[in-house]
Amino acid sequence: MQTNPSISKISIFYHYSLAVCLFIIGAYSPWILYGLLPFLLIVAYGLYRGDFTFSPQPYLYGWLILYVCYAISACVYWDPILSPRRLEYKLSFLIFPLLFSFKPNFKIKLNLLIIAFGIGILAASFAGIIKSFLIALNEPIHLSQFLTSNICINHPSYYAAFATIAFFGLLLGVKYYYCIPENIMVYAYSGFILIMILLSISLAAISFLVISCLTLVLYLVIAKRKIRLAFIAVFIFSLLTLVALQNRFIRDDFTSSFNSLTSFLFNHKEYSSDKDKINHGDEVRLIMWTVTVQELIKHPMGVGTTRSDATLSEGLNSLGYGDLAIKDINGEIKYNPHNQYLQTGLELGIIPMLCMMIYFLLLICHGIKSKNIWLSVIVLILTYNCLFESILQRQSGIVGFTFLTCLLLLYSKQQNPVSG
Image (tube, rainbow, N blue to C red):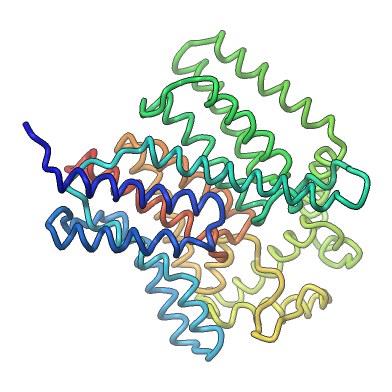
């Protein structure tokens, strides 16, 4: 059986344009437009030649519905500055589901895409290392110059989240999809990325990896009865933990976070009234959670996407946190709720917030059912990070997670056309 040469060429261009998009998302997502335009042209050309068919995946509709909710909110609570900005920020929820509703008549191959995303993360990592060395040029080199935002060209939480996705994508490509050959480079890359995640000191990413490791150990012991492998996993995990905790900055960061959390949980009223506690990111996060929950209880139907900043500012001022309540000239507050569920609830209401949670759960289940585990892992990382960051408020999170989930939903539909 001969292969259609035109299909072959379209397939090559399609995969390379996808790879460019994934590289950009991994390296520096604000530049995604430079990769997206060629990709759009290739899809349009393929559609014109009949190499693509419109075959929407029902699970894509969740992002579309979320965009419609934001659009209605922005229009009902119209603000000449904030409404257009909010609609522009969320455009990925509209564009990517529509774009990946066009199914190519050739199979999508994951190997090039996983590698491209991994190389993008590698580029971001080296750029961060160079940034740290430039910071240390005119002063004695100190480890603090290679931690958190110093080692990341993006926000540390977003960098660490995408680095975790690349880490799991590569390992799944070797051990699950069998599309990437197993060699020393894979393990060298994995080790390097783990070190970079530790240097970013993203507690969300590090705790996610800890939970994943413990889950793997339980799986090996209970389901597979592989005690020896479980012991090796525990040994490696314990060794990495001990090495990480030898670093004073990492140890102090975890200690500070733990002390803040316990103080907040066991003495909530005194914690909220102590203005001297705002000296660490975790204190700010806990205060923003408190204020957002209070406002959400007052406004269960939401206050609108353009009024959420003003509402938070009023709530912070009422508790005496004027330093956190300052807004810029556009009316946007410096600190968001640092929790996507609370952010969505405050903007759109409790019902849309619950619907978003259910949608994420459905995506995870669909990934497992369709045997597309990378999709489930990506949504798990998104779901987990939503607890600690308003991860879908920045372009990095919106573009990255929407693009990846939509792409893998299309991949699932190709692999399982009946379930799709």
